[in-house]
Amino acid sequence: MSDVRILLPGYSDVIEQLTHIEIVGECAALAEMPACSVGRAATRDGLPVYVLLCPQLYDRPGNPYGDDSGQDWPDNDIRFARLASAAAELAMGMVDKNWAADLVHANDWQAALVPAYLAWKGAKTPSVLTIHNLAYQGLFPRETLRRIGAPENSFHIDGLEFYDKLSFLKGGLIFASHLTTVSGTYAREITTPELGCGLEGLLSKRSNEARLSGILNGIDETWDPRFCPQLAQQFGAGDWQGKQANADYVRKQFGLAVSRGPLFGLVARLVHQKGIDLVLSAADEIIGSGGQIVVTGSGEPALENALVEAHRRRPDAIGVTIGFNDAQARRIFAGSDFTLMPSRFEPCGLSQMYAQRFGSLPIGRQTGGLAETIEDGETGFLFDKPSMEAFLGSVRRAFTTFDTKGQLDSMRRSAMAKSYSWALSAARYGTLYRKLVTA
Image (cartoon, rainbow, N blue to C red):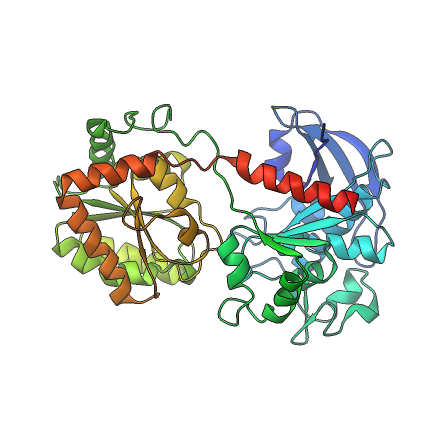
């Protein structure tokens, strides 16, 4: 029986959701990182959760990474190095006297220094680092080395140094026992100059050593339109009136005109990576051909403004909500005929999985997890280049399918039959963990 435990920074939102937190130990100050307490609590279903209690670092307005105006906190190096150092101490049995870890699994740059601190502290505990998006690396000036208590001799090309900056992510790539990312395709793509973000050499080396693998993300079982309580009307495959009820609801909610044409959904972070500019450029043709577009998400101010402007120009055909609301996102997937995902790269992507389960056919670029989860012409549409021409080619195929009811019905049924259960991914992680612990 495995004993899995999670360590989270003590953000106020995290603390509010945990009823009883028992202090189990302390982490002493290190360099410029303050001392902190570690509390233990549990989720509603009984999963043990450790919380790093340090109000001066984590109890702030805004989001985990920046303030209300979107500016990164200037001490993010201290905030996340403190998390990584505490995780290493906890894993080594130095914090909770009743527990130590056989293996540590860190995620992304914010936790990437856990394997490094384990090595610097002389621990032999094996570690896994999962890269969810290589473009976010946690880069800081050289003096961060001193601030976080890292050894002076770790700042070089085979250490944490990356173009004269200190890279938290690279620290993990160097010291982790094994690297995973969130799809097999992305695991290959990040070893190339096109998507390696300057780290392709190191990642190729890890891949050649059989220390880099891709394990596709899953989605939870609540993504089932037959039982989802947030929908305007629940429905299953073949119950297209139920799907239509969600489309009517979404059109009304976004103030769109009544229409018999297709509804295109866009549920995404509004950033360059996601190809939002391609959607904006394609909007006139989509509307001219009888389609409508609904968007929800937040991100880069320029893209948010461009979408709001597009809505102002055509309020009857383009609906936009800046921000994110889970229930609204679910209704968009349920009500839309197609989901737009023209990403320039997509490590895994979840929207295409949600969309298929809800009978919305994704239109995505053949990259990363999209290439693995969309069957072109069967459960959605794929295009190869991140260009306007290639994207519009798939949009036109979608219109043709919409007008061919037999094909639309068949594709929707195939999409809704897909399973993206976590069970498969969990089994692969389990195999990897056992291999590393017994090595």
